[in-house]
Image 1 (cartoon, rainbow, N blue to C red):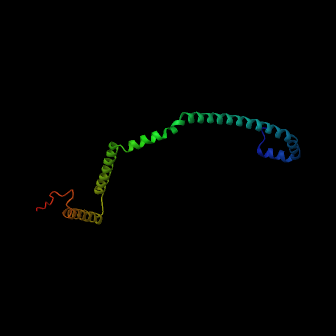
Image 2: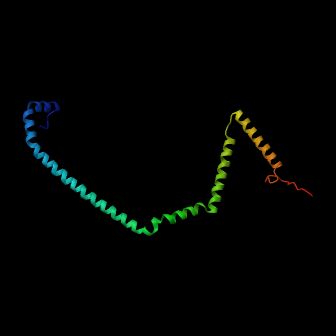
Length: 155
């Protein structure tokens, strides 16, 4: 029967439909019982393995919990160390310098990029306005850091 083509097999099954059906019906209870036994034993193995793994996980969690019980997992100490590092004056100095360098780099990049003529004119006007505003501010404010000469009132 192994040398049969699909068409020959279909023809054989059609011709012997009642015999094949009877064979399947007579063997079905035994097949079902065998499948049930295989399935149950397979489920028992899986259930046993799962319970073993879950027991190991629970034991691990208990051990870890006991190890850090008094320390709240060391989070308080770690958090204090992290905050201390971030607020350290030396670290802050570097972050501020880095920020200023980044801003200056962006400014240089914008200056170096090609721009349409109307953008160039607008930027020139903004620069002129900044210079004028700065000059006027310093002229009218005695505490201006750019002021080179301070007014001294004589009595």
